[in-house]
Length: 424
Ligand code: SF4
Image 1 (cartoon, rainbow, N blue to C red):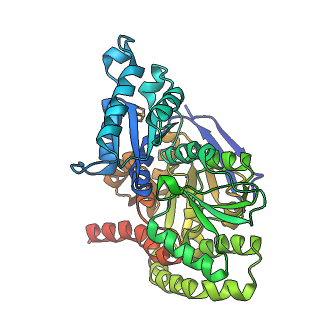
Image 2: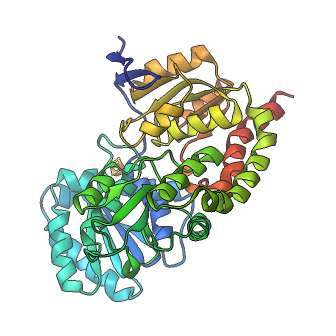
Image 3: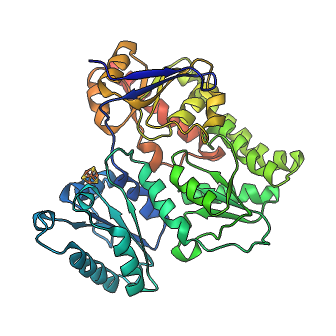
């Protein structure tokens, strides 16, 4: 039986469908893998099961022997049966951890399906432990897998940080806040570019250190660096910050438009903007040219997974000449993605939500040249002779900005090259 599918043609020029049914996604715990590298004195303690511990270890792809910055406090059968006081146990584990690790300045208690099943109140635990372990800050968020996608873990983590951010003075000059975890090298490049435009007060959320988190207030103008930060954006707006509408900084065009949104908000002249961006734009164009030959005309199919699908599809279609067969996305945030939707080729089929079997059928029937999907679908599709790209790689690799545009294109070229070699 087909899953319910609805069609709403009214969203820009795209052909929008909505699907509800079986989904194949990783849970929000996955975000810990890139977040723990970003906030260098934070620790992520998952309150979960052995399954949760395995998931993080395999997503990280490493066994960590040095002092790690994430771990799992295992909830066992006794806890699940209500035989043990999970709060006492949690307090003991956290106290021991902080005693042993004075380098930890910010501790996240990360909720999971098991902690939610036993209704462990992690927000109360975080408050209790914060006052006990002062000056170490203890915050909590949920990484649970129920009805989420794997990038929502970052959204939940950053949203948990927002109420704790320092308040900016009412009379402060406008400041720019870039929101979303970016590789340090990308952050540094953007900082240099903003500074070349004359925008001096630029802050990042998350900051690299717990005590350097940005102050915010009514004069904060923020740019989203990632398209999956719905709750974080809402929390920032509640603190008075205002979003600058823009496409996302993927590819040369996306990066230029993203930077331009800041330039316009901060009154940067066209000449200063051109001076600051032209060299990077030219380097990105040069880096993209050889990939255009390989991706031009290639038919690409996106399964809904990372929420990066719409900006990536826009990049592949407009800058590399790829043909979009279907762009699946777990959620389509109409507001945050408005500028992206406008740039998609007219008539692009966008599917919001997922009904796995139906989508697999459409993918098999279309036999695209490249399928962008989650880890769980890649192997079966490869076995059927389709080239796949794991969408999760796009979160672990620096892909934003001019200098990374060529690397981003290369990520999509690689599976085509591998398939061509296999077929020789
Ligand atoms: S949080 Fe839930 S979905 Fe994620 S690993 Fe743990 S049990 Fe599985």
